[in-house]
Image 1 (cartoon, rainbow, N blue to C red):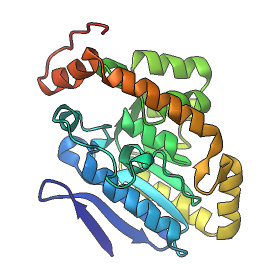
Image 2 (image 1 turned 60 degrees about the vertical axis):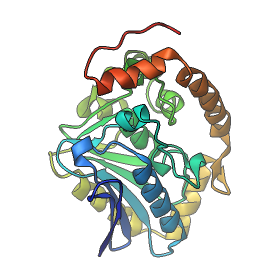
Image 3 (image 1 turned 120 degrees about the vertical axis):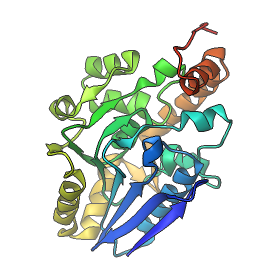
Length: 270
């Protein structure tokens, strides 16, 4: 039995479906490559919160609809229009209502296509990740006059070898699924079209274990108390401060505008 949450179009922005004791969250904006807008953030954030409270849910899987993209990141056209991309009541949950929204149940990204910008940040925020062979990863925000402000700038350095991470962060260039697996960004690469199936199989293996023990193990692993990962808080504060300065620049306005107008950006370094 599934539910849907709509955005400004007639199509649902997010689909929610239970598979036994696993909640599957599907970003459902394939026409926008599953880019995240305010409707997506609100729906995903609320779904995570419900999963945390539901004693029957043992794991959460997040994926994208269609065959092209897991998530293309933030909706740059919505940014250019000045729209709010965060959960209206819980902006502290950050991008997609997900990346700074700790729950103590395992989360798995089923990456069914490109995962760029915020898409990679969703993967970095997930406990585990499985990707189709065609999946690609990367943090191209610097190409748009922005920074990876949804945890990417500090999490990628924690999850990849430092020089590999910094090259990805500075160049904005993409990484293949095979390279992502080699460097440990994801757990497994599977044939195209099977990432969700493989993620559900992994979730079933997790769900067969004692749920209280799994949840306690996750809290210990992350150093989490009362839904907060204490070690990450200074990095979130630093990210917010740096993001505010970058967003106030002329370049930050030029990047999304150039994207919307389908032309190369002209950087002013101011």
